[in-house]
Length: 96
Image (cartoon, rainbow, N blue to C red):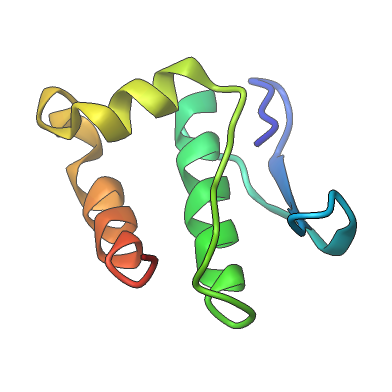
């Protein structure tokens, strides 16, 4: 996810890399700027998960955002993101 306070839009992207390290598919998108950078990171993960459901349920998702990782690992501590985390948890059920 990409976010700046002065921009009207945020951006995100994902890459599907197979077990051999080959790029299979990529996606990029922009959307109306969210409240903060972390909101953009959450939106990016949700969008990547939704897209990957169309191709394969055997995925490992990665991010460079430490706060997003903490949020997913300890969702109860991030009450202000409850709605967004609920959507990600619902998508997570679809992946083994």
